[in-house]
Amino acid sequence: MMDLRWIPPLSLLVLLSACGTVPRSGGYFEDDGPEERPPVDIAGIPDAVPKSEPLATSGNKPYAVYGKTYTPLFDTTGYRERGIASWYGKKFHGKRTSSGEPYDMYAMTAAHKTLPLPSYVRVRNLQNGRAIIARVNDRGPFLHDRLIDLSYAGAAKLGILGTGTGIVEVEAIRPEDPSVQVAQSQKPVIEIIPSAVAADSPPRPASVSSPKLYLQVGAFSRWDNAINLRARLQRETERPIFILSALVPNERAPEAVRLYRVRIGPLADVQEGDQLSDRVTKLGITDTRIVVE
Image (cartoon, rainbow, N blue to C red):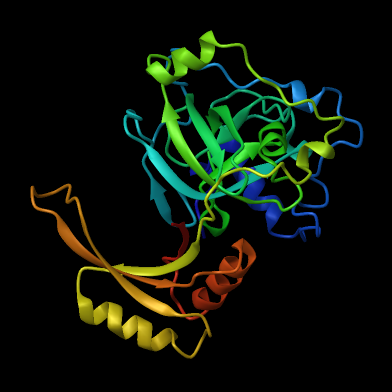
């Protein structure tokens, strides 16, 4: 049995509640949706303002969830990653986050598995071009290998409330970064949106690229292992299965190592990636994740 003592408080609540709850068609759990009448104007909620802060006394030590150990970072320099964003709402409003602060669904905050608590990130929706700056103060998400869990306010401004997920790029930012200082010196431009529902309506056309999704089902240092896995999965999906060869840095040696990554896709959407992940997990393949190109 998993040792629940090592799971951060709010993340533990997410895990336990998800076990017996069926998501609604709108993309969120039935008891975790938006308020019928939000007490604040969602459109007017400003971005988080990066500032120098000491590390939280909780949430910054290695921890384990579902048998996997996560080691939080202490330096965010150069962190940039693409992946799938999710969000959490009123079910956790006011409850304790991993950093010890209460969760505020109307603040521009986020949960991440390894970024320092607190730290700041710029999250950009790769499907519509919208972007926010959020303060990371919680741990998670852990289901389907999501990259980041946004507050209700952050998800609304990125336009991912209805679907429950979004394809995003997450970049760590610091108060001393020149781009942050330039942005803070300019008057923020806020799009006037009549209501929280409108905040999640289709955005105006934007010149953004169309990201492609793939399900990575394994990464190997030996070519024959990659070939064997591909052959094993050929009967499980009609989607193309290919092997991507790449040199990656080796932390234990100065030379880079070659990895052979087995991927399925491109996928139609996040839901297909989740369904494929569930199917291959039943075959004993647990090291899966959706990647964005």
